[in-house]
Image 1: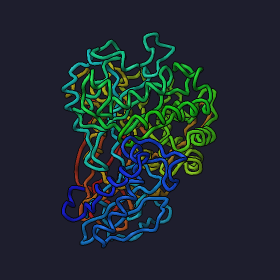
Image 2: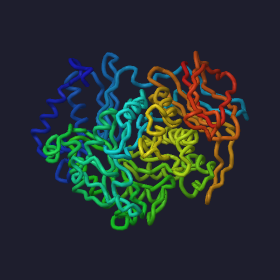
Image 3: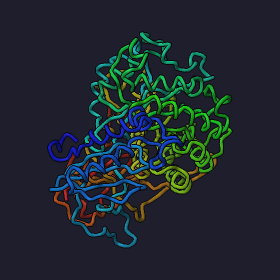
Image 4: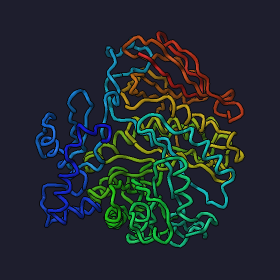
Length: 589
């Protein structure tokens, strides 16, 4: 809150110091993130920061006497206006897990002078409700994964420098870098993937897939990216997980004394990677059912929180792929229920990997079933997964898609060409709709294979259509997601191996920026034809700019014949969305 020095520090440090001195248990909880225990006053929940929030509230009244004092206790976020039109301060509530966030005037998207959007009955169109905010837009939907080691990262420095262009200017303005993946727990189908034990790899730069953790941290720091760490669940232990978190976040960590690196204050962690799959080491022993996994994962989470002097958020595996299934696990909503009820307050988000999967996708070559995956995901999330999370999860539990791409390893051109970019755009459209706060494009570098999503031939100047889409979105999006509705959007019936869906040809979402601009993203998923449709805003814009990603050969386009064009657009009449394209309208009210 340095922006309010001299006005609104409110003796926060003084009140906090009193709490620390008068109650050693509270001191441990505030300093080290220890859980509140039965012998402590039951006024607060397990989390540290809500207690600190209450101290700030009490101090606020004593220090300035002008801010309103909400009734306590609270079960949700508290937003208190600051006097003199100086913005507000928001507290997460007694069950929140995030620190207070200070906002200033203009940080929130302002209202637009608009009427409810309307369309002629029967006309095809997208209605954008510019003043109906759904949730903040998370910048962590722009993210990638480390899948290399230091000794083999061709043109690594130049790639990292180029990747900085994907840092978003909205929704927190941070890119995310995921550290850890399949080899973290180990895999039975690869003898060399035995599990990552970070204390065994100091001062080692390989071989693949393991090296010194400091190499990964250095890359994340170069990007100035938020970090997402995968913890070894399958071949690791809760104690090792605690030491891993301590090395990242504890200034007095014993490993840091021997192997120095700056404190990271990493916030996001996953307990295991695809541990619901029998090919992952430790599945049979520790995760043959979702309850068995969640019971042990709870121990990991508690050890990790205890090891970190700063609050952290912890994710639990809930699915191997897009279908929210696991081998031997209760499926879909029932599995979600069992994990959340078992882990309780020790889980902050649930993890799935957004790869095309059974029963919808036929990865043997039917591209339409792959392109329909996110429409199928939308139906499953809406009807089963999101309701289960709302019913059984603690307040604020969210979803993270921590790996995705088309998984078309035998078709490199399509995987990271225009087809792959459309799959990415569709995945992020789904993320914005369901407040999926992390969407991780796999991966930055992997021997120029299909999953090396951003660069062709290890050349940082030969960027893929996936890179082009990410960059376009990074520069043209808003801070809050707003409501959209479709009307008479043409669709196509897609039949997969064991299920089918009527897939709308257009996927769409919208947001609003702090500058008042409105953004609408429309993806024409299909390869057969252009689609003409209306965009109803409820107001007449001063200006509309269309940023359009498309190639000259539809789905078959690659980096050589795909580009982004920017030009004025007219939304006063129906707009034609080219086949196999992504369009972002930047609209000035």
